[in-house]
Length: 602
Image (cartoon, rainbow, N blue to C red):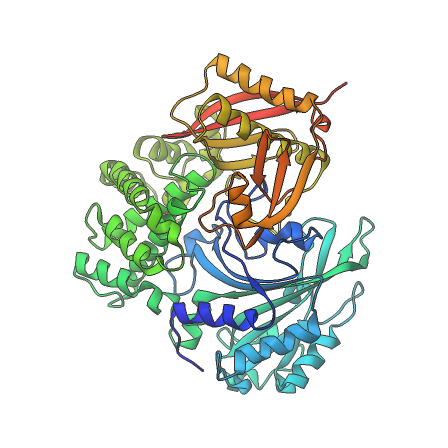
């Protein structure tokens, strides 16, 4: 197999699928658009959900990209050889176009061709859906793999728990998938039968790619019906694939982290792999600084805070500071590590360069803020821990005190306690937090379970209202106002925007008046597809750096509002009801938040 750099692997993947008639689309933001089910974009398919459900994509029915992703469920695992919070997902999609008979041979070609990855066919194993009472065995995929050249003994079958995607909730699109694995231990693999894949010893196989075939819809009665639009959704993790191709034991030993490792070694005088403890600390700093850099540098860039995405950002920066201190990383060093990350990705994600000043400023600010109390907090923790025997429990009030006084997110306290064979009363901490703050952070780190942005009537109406709100803010407050974030539930809209202060009561009243004036006029909401250049010339609002493809969807509400957007929208503004601003909040310096509701007409 080929030894590739990260740059070459990205280019090869996109070049391959472009040759198969796919349009290359840019990575979407790490912050999901109008999806209250998740804090971050967690998979390549996440931004494409509306199109997988049938909405027309401006670029067509064959798409490919490299998507920035963040998954926060494994933060405490970061430090081992494979876990990352930020990663890049190579993906391609068929939106009702090709299906298994095209995708499986293409997968085989990309994996085995000397022009691409050049993996020996005998080193590849695949798994397919074994079938059950709901849906038949995926004999078609298995036959296609065999026809391509995969050895029969290397084709395995797994139940829904292993080879099935979706649906997100109790109903919705779903279907079998087929996974591709590198055989790392042929001696153990040769002992297995076609249904014994899960019985293989750890390390026998390593997954490299996954093709999902969305061909069913699970209805309210629990039955699986054939989908009208069958889709293909694939995902190949760039970091893991690089690790495999280059024969490395860890994703941190690829070219992605070379310069960052050199920077940490220079600042600490230590070597990355000199012992297990040092290697773990290096990896935590490497991953968390990279993730923080991408969060801060995103087109919808966030800053550290005590809620939602900002809480996760603050947590990973502070975890990086703590592990950095363990290896003698001096104060302010995170900025230097971040600079190597920006330089590494400058040609792929130009928004990092554009926002580099903000990245470094916020990293330095948060590191300084935490460093002031870190040593005091560690001393306080040690004092508490010294009074407990192994297996003891740190009570919730004490855990909250460490957070409130020393800035320790409870997860850091839990992690430090585990290092001493102690536990933390997290529920007690949450109760103390709720009592003190009048709200609890519990559940803010939501995990994405293929959560679909719903298209219910209430959500659609509120989404349309954000367009009117955005336009009104430009008129009342400043033409330079831009959207910095949006979150919509069935009950309310939340709109973040750049502005130095809260709106005055008079400004609030004028914004409401302008929005309601457009609603009463019952103006049609008009969608048109056009090129990005046409949209710019036509005065449509959008973040033009890297979010959009060559063709875009535009939505006009008369001459009042003109935006590039993916939907969904009401057909006429008269459907919305009365618009009312319910609350204003500070998000961070220079970013304000409005929460608003729509009162249905009686």
